[in-house]
Image (cartoon, helix red, strand yellow):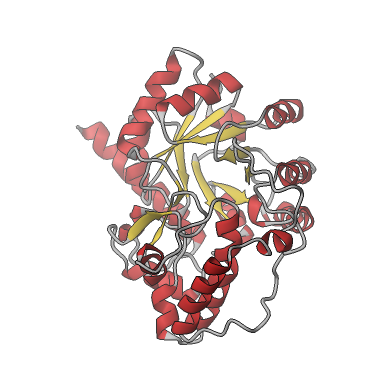
Length: 372
């Protein structure tokens, strides 16, 4: 089995998933491995982001994560704007009421929207994003939401780029290994975003043990990992490193609003919720009055992916803008994907400082283990 260092060229196996290029570059420069969440971009904007990364990682390795669901959603080639026209009236009206009741303007135009392209969950978008990614010196390409498609694995092997896949259960890991992936990310339910129901403490050793009889591949631990000591603990269970996400949101470089950073610092580990009220699939977020509304008696219920995302994305853009402008009701609605590890966030630190803290905490934890 090739090591993570041999596969990805990273010395300290701290993988940092982020939608923000500044975080990705800062982590890679500091000795970790930045991974850009690519599915929020169009092929054209992803080209811009990756070109910027090429110029700012100082030759250090980085990777990209693309959302290619195993069960594709047939959108008939329609764009986001065209799909939005098919959103049920009751859902549109419900969102409008939630926002207007909070004093949020819903009439102004939103800047930076990509309504004239298909949703990121469309197979043709996945192909195009992958083509863009392989035009750059990426050292990893990862897929979420199911088995990595054969065309991604074949392209990765042809390009000499390892393919990683996120799994939330032992049976998913076995299917991914059979499919030919190079790296597994065993993600516990503590994680922010789309996640399963098994805890990190259980799923990591379960996956490591299960795949051993089939084909050994490096396993990265994910879900609630916010410190180097946690990383060391997961590696003691057989992981080859850590895949992290939420910890980078509490950095000044991240894509979240200032309101959300403040809410992260104030939040506890029990303040998250696994809900369909943002994408249509269960994903862990910071609980807010948005979730209370969707769980209330007047709620029309969530829509399937990608329709729920098309409904919620512009709503949250308005919420964040209003919250940062001082609207207290909008602040109560503000939310983002974040894991239960949010309870370990006590301040905002630079991404480089987070990497340094991880390294120091990891070294201290290993020393404690050795002393035992």
